Length: 170
Image 1 (cartoon, helix red, strand yellow):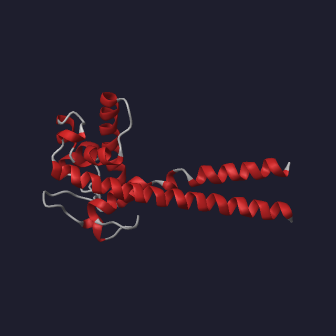
Image 2: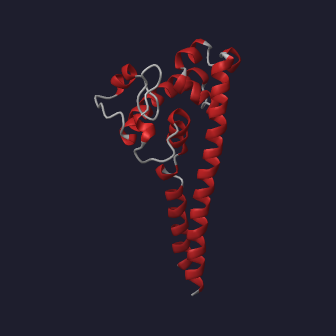
Image 3: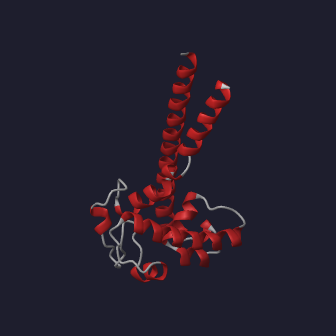
């Protein structure tokens, strides 16, 4: 019975470590767009882009208005809710057209240059080099953040497993 209990505890730890608490996209996008290094409200949340973009995710105000009635641009949680709605819609269009998930580079183009990327028929070879270079930098950052989150999740699971192993021996 202890083995089943240990396996169940390990399953719960894996599930907890790989769900919402281990979400690299909001972190990577906020870091790349405005320099936000934490999920706490800070200076990046008040940053305004050269074209009037708002929030840590640098969303155009007219786009924000299509997805939210809130004007709490400086609230990281509200900003992510808006960004997530935008991304869900753009990802659906991409998936319908391409029949696959986007790469991190493509994900950034869907975020930052959706019209240009769509006009390029979602082909990286047709994207402006300026936009593509920026998207590739985001892709590199996203992959690094994702690896870091996976390592944190693995370490959490390992700690739980070690605790269970120690408890079972005693």
